[in-house]
Length: 294
Image (cartoon, rainbow, N blue to C red; front, side, top):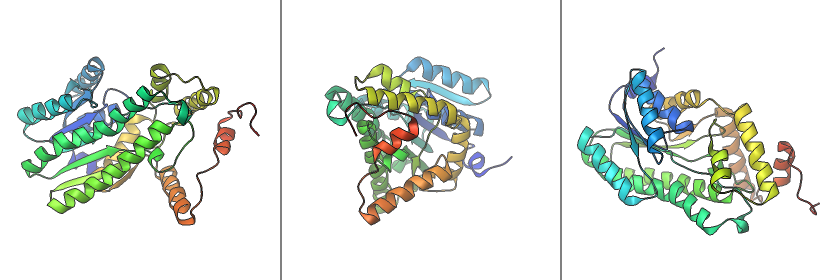
């Protein structure tokens, strides 16, 4: 079945960060199927190489590259290498990101900094290194930054992630405006995924375990729901790439759920309401209230 995404992304070079797992892997695989040469960039070089090899085995073209997007020098080296080898980048997807759980005042400062370095600084470094080269190439291109429904609505016990995704959303809107000023033929899309099956919650609990029982229970419930109800990464990728291909700024993984999230945010701001009651969220997840709370 022919789609707009299959036509637009049938050629050229795509760079996808955080592409060795989850939605990043789904996006890389779909782009490989459509015909783009995919640079599979991830901090885990081995898994990036495996993902690229899988794309090649299915008839696509890809290269796995190890890069820590939180390191500006590594990102600059990646951009330099990609443009030296392939001359242009038609699609840049800034997807790399990590989660973290806990009450705001209990977050380890080092973990806070690491989340911001990957989720926020990583996007900035990629834009700083790739955008000037994309502008100089003078060809139509697209940049898609992965925000989240967590970049629209706040959620308890996920403060580092939520703050970072609000920042990515704002950065993407600013990028859209700045590129408009210079008249660059570069489309910008803000990708707002809801639940897509991945290892992000497991990785957070492994890399930065929280001692807060409520936060741990919430993350366990989110992991459970991610497995039971999360979208398949390949299906979500196809749906989102179709929106990017038609030029949408706002790109949703689940039209109904993401529209509802955007609507809630809009109503909250219009009505000047406080954030939602987290106790309602805990009840929906089956997470008990902390002892001593009422």
